[in-house]
Length: 431
Ligand code: GP9
Ligand code: MN
Image 1 (cartoon, rainbow, N blue to C red):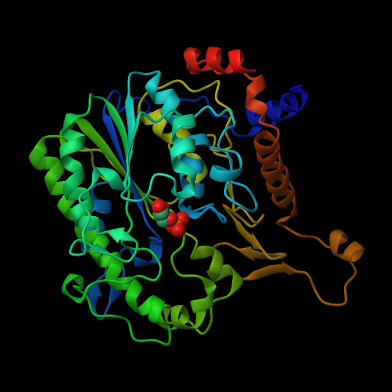
Image 2: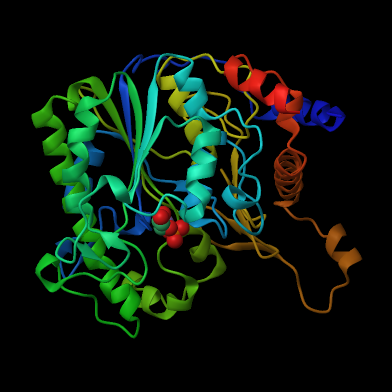
């Protein structure tokens, strides 16, 4: 039965539910939502330079006119892009290993898509890859997505593809016609691809010189990042020309890191540091999160934030009451934030601390507060005063609750008010 759920509901209601309404509530009511997933885009490239040149000139301009969350962390694991989609669609954590899109693609969820659809939206995803990659065809169906414009919707040839497939510029260019035909309001997610490991690019598409280090990967990364930046610039002007821009809000989010710690030496060289410490490693897990609302002024938002917060933030902006939802994020404009962001491996970032690999750092200075010392017994260690410990325990509990929901498919035992009645009936029949 669903008894395990009662304890989890209590935890969520007491810790991760914020029913307050900020003055941002409903500010984008009934607007289209254009959500752009930025492949492997990390925050360190934003407002930064290489060879004295801006790496992302368009995004740098855009953040000036947008809500830009500079301390926003990805929370993905082995499911990479699909994990980031899972976070956005469910407000649950992806799994500690494997890809939840594959292993629990048939579970019952209360998805962002379903909630928006019950508030009059249509929904679709644009991504020029095979539909079954990451089991998307199955999972998207389950999440309630109306249509997946996969590789078959695009004209892909040798000329217009590189690396993983269709280049981002033709991808956006070919998507516009579909977007224009959608019934409004729509919730449309676009997933870019060119800035994907190993970051190959045709020489004629490169508009910034490579970096010069021992890492070919990092050297090339700046060029594909720049290419995606230009693709988004073109997309924005197409959105304006087609009239879609005015009736929409545009949300951009990095899906996960692009540069692994295998390239730490080169990364340290770029960042002008002696080495990449565990603290630096966590700070490098920041990805851009940008909410652009046409006609509104921009603001840099410095609170600690993560992908888990996207769902409640979106519903808040759209003026949708989601007080019955069970998720682990909180609205980024709300007052009652949780105060920390859990990474999938149990590391966390709180207002004051960064915890990773049994080490507790001062978040603002990067100084170590308490380390697990060699030669000290576990028992002594637990007694040792550790500033991070209370949150460390909360994080472990929260991750385990999320896992329990997924492993036990516990949402079968909960009635969400936004749930699609038809889906429920057909599910009951087949049980
Ligand atoms: C594949 C694309 C990239 O469709 O989403 O996947 P990733 O390797 O980043 O998870
Ligand atoms: Mn990805």
